[in-house]
Length: 315
Image 1: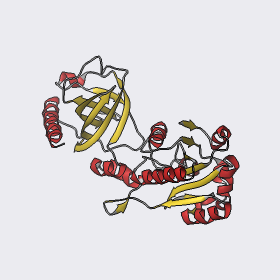
Image 2: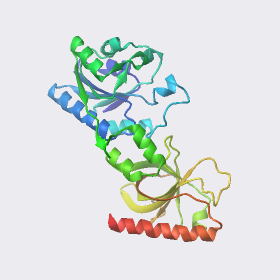
Image 3: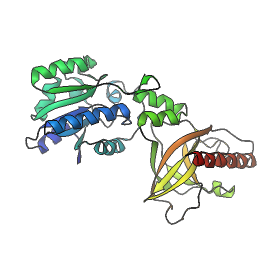
Image 4: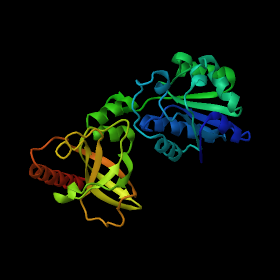
């Protein structure tokens, strides 16, 4: 299983193996994306072909409309890892550029076949758009595939809360602190990965030592307090976390911080600065706010901890 920086390099690595491409941005690799990937894997198995994801490290909007592109839910490396876990034998992480932007819809499959002559199938979601000025849709691709000897499979959207699951819905739910909705649409808990960094030990001074994690995503969750689990090297603990600007402690902070307090005692050697940790957000407890004093903050953190412990009992 490999990650290729371009369709050209992927094509050069092949030796005539039949290929089925799953094409899309796949930001978040949510339930809808997973359906496309599952169907692609199934078709590839039936055609004795290799299932491969064709995607982009940045949103195409960053090239087409610089500054107006949607923030990414997931880093490109994490996305690639998820795509491989979903059954893809390889991931093409192609940068969107002038060449791609100027491919006419009618020439799109020919463009793919130029680099992958053994292309036998394509899997896309029903809202897939492609070609210069995005004039091509999934039905156009289906018809084009018939003319060019490529099976095109269009996969219906997944529904959650009476609406189709989409990356844009997930972004909105994140900003609103609706982590339960986010997790339903993702099909698994929202995950954070980052490296523990030395902090100012402010949490320790008020009785709540924290792991300070270097993490600043494009699509930011609502600032506030969350319950979840934190893990590293096979160890997992239930935890409460604050993500935000810490207005009680830092009046002019511009970059949000993630601070995690484990509900159970942790081994300092296993959770020291420099290690990579993963946190899953399970519940949103409350929005971030500024308190009058450290004493009021301490009282609220105590309540947050009790809330998180109660949620753990429910789980």
